[in-house]
Length: 309
Ligand code: CP
Image (cartoon, rainbow, N blue to C red; front, side, top):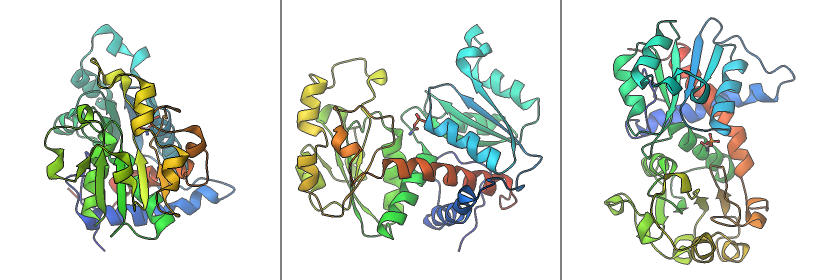
């Protein structure tokens, strides 16, 4: 088994398949701590982590904070809405000022693609990308993979449909890298207006959801990111649901043991029907549980001794 010789986690694209497997194996091992009556181990005692979120988050931020507490790291979270970012302070100045307090890691979410890479070039602390623009969301793809491995026993050879707003989705990009590196067969499905140019060189694209989900072992629905849409990418949310929404009727035409994933937050009745989100095929809350284990693994591997230069 390969180790993990990176100082930062900026994306899935730079990782080897063996490194991804190593993170997943580490997360499997650490998951057991979350089932203990006392969910605390001293692994990262004395380490300090800053969570710097320029965009809204429930799952990612809460699970990083929980992972940091379980591993006994000291952590603080900066919500930029109440920080000096509101007075015009730049990302670099903010990071440099936080770094003057000597944290060991900065977990950053930012609306611009490349923000995490930018910080990694200017900071001594380890940088973890918690989502940068439409570029990558590596820990989301890792928790999705952990969930698929638990439910399906493997990733290699699975047929996985990724459906919805691919254009704006960092989740889709990270998953595309991860799933193809681990040997899954990925098919993408979106209206033509929500397909990024050139993506068809990485995976086949269809505009028909029935074609995408036929024979799929897993269907990963994406959130319609209305906050990133300035123009009319589709006529109405009602029409989007009719053409691309995952309904129970469509799920019934997929494999009997298909699993449904969604990174959250969901637009119920738009990309996914409530009866699917809350139904027996859904593993959406398993994804959230696995998010804590994956973030524990990332913290451990970057701060706990395995990281090298
Ligand atoms: N999946 C995800 O990133 O959710 P949050 O935006 O709530 O962190």
